[in-house]
Image (cartoon, rainbow, N blue to C red):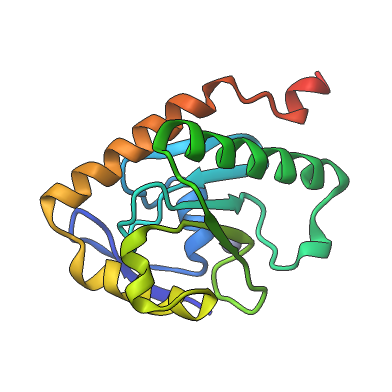
Length: 171
Ligand SMILES: [Zn+2]
């Protein structure tokens, strides 16, 4: 199923899969790429300006957890662990919500959404996720917050520099 998206420069392009477009660099994410290997691509979601929110997407086009190869399974959990520790170390993020669904038009990607104090006005647990994301998308696009989000991307990018993926280990 293809959809029409608007690029930051105002152009509209029709793409089949937003994850493919993002991980191939056709469309860019806020602050640029946090980390990429031959299997995965880590970025801030451009639609939801929350500092330290990370999307960990596969580069290959597939949807289900059981389609990860053996090598990708290992790298996936190592990446989650590394991203999580950098969120804590560099951004002081105390709790993270993880979510992932297979029935999506975007291919395989895991959301890592930091839990901040202001989010509790939308509820105490997973039921607050959707309202939190909508609030961020609709009300947090101001310059000050965008700068803070981009700063978060820079710090995570720096933190990911010493990540050694298993593809490197196999060389
Ligand atoms: Zn795709």
